[in-house]
Structures are given as structure tokens and as C-alpha cells.
Image (cartoon, rainbow, N blue to C red; front, side):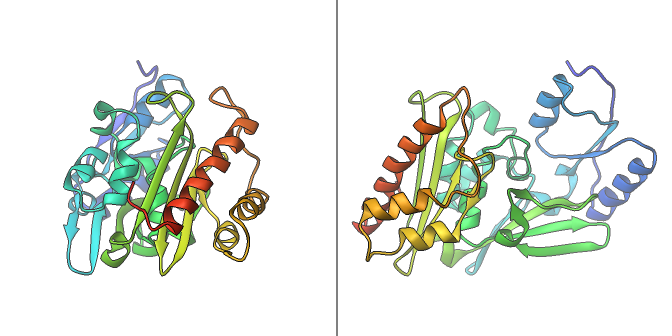
Length: 281
């Protein structure tokens, strides 16, 4: 049970939501945007977050878009992971989704909730980074659209009062060969040690990671090394590991040393798969 009271609001437009945020903020309510609510409830129970008001964006029609046209796919940030996966409009994203939590939790967790979560894993970000997706941000001054690789640096860089409204991905990117590998200490339960996502475009391999450092990331420097076919696979992997953007995690799920062991094996699998023309596993 959450030990404090808070108000609940469900606006029906972007303007109403952002106006409400600033009104509640002026009242000292420390408002939070809310879509699935799983993290608000979990962290609220542990007193890790406190708020006087939540603003549920699921009443905003644009946040529930699931639209595909010949050029692009538009996904609303308030759509549940289960609903997105069931459409199979974005197989790479669906593969990442099916490995998150369990089916019951995925019914409540939303795309925007996972991307903007406090939890370090946020696996849905990986396919979006690799497919050069765009994010649509709602603010008091209107809508803004950014490449996710520009605005996601360790986390989605939202200004106060902003919220994630939609994700847009070009269909040509969705159709590319992909690979998504999630390694756990135990086979099918528990938090992941490492999630590795990769995409192949024009013979070039893009790669992103979750669970390796304290945040999900894609590194172009690592990609450049891994794509240097003048070097042996062993050398590429060894050099790539030297380019990690932060310390390797060491926690109850696995030591840094064990994570590096798993990473080396996974990178071997990725390079063997793509350079052997296998994909979508």
C-alpha cells in the first residue's frame, strides 16, 4: 500500500495535460505523468517517489496510436507492451517486449513507461535506437520531434513538464534483419544479466546493450570496431570491450567479471550470425 495520498487526473488532450501539470506544480503537488502506473505504484510503496498528483495520459487519443502506413509506424507511448507485441507490426520491438517481466505485468507496462522508467534495463529502447526511430515529445509550447539517438543519453532527456507522446519508426528500418539476445543467470526467470540487440543495414552491424552498464546504450565507437573485418573476431571483441561507456555492473544478479564473460560469448554469436547471414532470432 502507498503510504501517502495523491490526486488522480485523466486529461483528454495534450493541452489539458500540460496545463494541468503546471497548475499542479504551482500548488506544490510535484505531479507525475502516468500511463501504466506500475513504477509509480512499486516505488510509491517503498517511498522512493512521492507525489501529490498523477496525470494519466491514456485519455489522450494521440498517446494510444497504433498506425502503420507504407512509410512509417506510429506507436503511442500509452499503449501496453502486450498490445504492441500482439500487433506484430514491429517484430524487433516485439522480440524485446516478450522478454520483459511476465505477461500479466506487460498488460500494464506501457511503451512510454518502459522507455522513461527508473529501472536500469528499459529494453524497449534498444530496437528504437538501432532503427533510428523518432520520438514525439509533448510540452506546454506544443509538440517536438527528435531522433531518439539525439535525445536519449542514458535516459530520455525530457524537460520539466514534458512527456513522451509517440514513437515513429520508418518501415524500411523495421524490415531489416535483427537479433535480440537476453542472457540471465537463470534460464527463464529473474532480471537479465545482459540484453544485446543488433541490426544489420547495408552490411553494417549496429548494436545496443541493456544490463551491461547502469543504463541502456548504443555506441557508434563499438560498432566501428565490431565492423572492422580486417581484424579477427577475437580482436574486434577485445577492442570493443575496451570502449564501454561506463563501468560494468556488479550486483546480486552477476559480477562484472561474469557479465564480461557473457558479453564476449554474445558478441561472438552476433558476429557469427550476421556474418553468416542468419538473423531474426
